[in-house]
Image 1 (cartoon, rainbow, N blue to C red):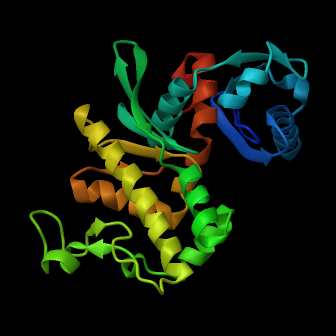
Image 2: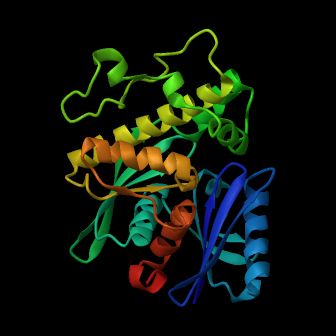
Length: 283
C-alpha cells in the first residue's frame, strides 16, 4: 500500500511517500498558495520516484493549509489528521523512542508529549511559544534588512553573539551554580552603538534557539521526559541552530536530539495516523 503524507502550510507543502512500510522519499515545494503547493509536491514526488498517481491509495493531510483540501484531491482519497497528533507520531517514529516530548519549530513552536498507553499511542498538546522561525525572520527584517533564512544564517556565521549578549562572566566574573561562566545572562544586554550586523544576526539566532530550548525543556521536565526531547521542523536541521537548541537543553539537565528527516516529521505523522498502525508505516 502506498500512502502519501502531506504537511500543508500557507505556501509550502512537505510530502513524504511510504510504500509497504518503507519511506521511499520526501520533497518540499513552495508555491503561491496551499492548493498549488500541495499539487506541486504530489507531482514532484511521484515524478522523482517514478510512482504513478493512480497507485497512491491514500493521501494523509495535516497543517493549516489542509483545511482547503476536500475529501478527495487530484482524484485521490484524502484523510485529515490533527496537526498535534501528526507532530507527536512523526517525531516519535523518527527518534526511535517509546515516549518523548516533541517540539515542532515552525513559524512558532508547538510542544507535544507522546506516550504508549496500552495498545495505543497517546499525544497531548503541552503548549508552546510564539517564538519560532517567524520571530527570527520578523526581527531580521527590522534589524538586519534580511528576510530569508539563508541570508540570516550567512550573516550570522560571520558574527559572534557574545559581542551583543551579556554572559554570567560579564556580570559576576565566574560561574553560578551549575551554569558555566560563558552562559548567556541577558540576550542583547551588551549591545553598543556600533554593533555589527553580523553580531546582531548571531545574537538573534542565539536568542530564538535558547528560548525554544528552554521552554521545551521545562515542558518536558513537567512530564518527566526531559531526557527524551525531540526537535522537528526545518530550523532544527540547520547545524548552527540545532547546536544551540540541544546545548541549551543539555545545560539545563536534559537530553535532546534532532532526528534525520526532522523537517518531514509532521508529514510522516499524518501518514502514520491515517494508517493507524505505526509498524506498517515506519519500521
